[in-house]
Image (cartoon, rainbow, N blue to C red):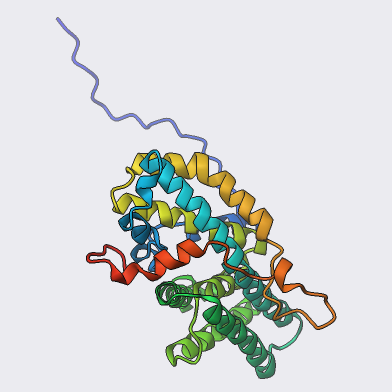
Length: 308
């Protein structure tokens, strides 16, 4: 006679699980912030912008390449090279401005005068980028995404009151002053006193979150390239798998090279008269006129998927 199976409950063996490593050092915290900022679900408005790619395709320039893949890679290379040269100096100077504000908060009381001085510098940077952006389509996209980043900090990254007990009193005071700076700058944008362009707002956001300048520069260019490939998928020029292959094998060296080439560029607004700043060698510039022309013709298309 077959023996009935034993259905009695037995306690499972206890697993020895080591606790997750604490985010104690600054590098770990920065890595976590990088993961948050690279999340494609962040409400930054980038999904409505193609940075001129849709116009490039509709005007027939993509058909000049041997394959759609090669056409996309060529466009990403040219767009990334020009964008790094024109936008990264503003990211760097905005980041340095807010970083200096944050360091003074640790040493001083962060008075009203210093807050206003920081806002004035950010306003100068924003106005300079406005006059250096050559077409209205690029301006429109940059402003829309810049405002989204400022809103992201106040609504998505600032510490809610219910979690205030998890931080020290000093850090809460510094956080409050930083939130005040970003809220004041966003208010100026809402009042149309400043445009609120994306490079300036990205530098402000990453500095406020404590991200190092080098990582902020690299991530900024990576997100620009990723946005172009996302637009190519929506335009049905690439499949999602092909876009990932390009992102890994072709985009990575491009982003690294452009970051290295343009990381020392500055706008010249934060330099003194005796610094020997050379606008031609060290200042922002547009290096791809065709891309500007195509982006400016975006609104002339009969049908459009993207707003810009």
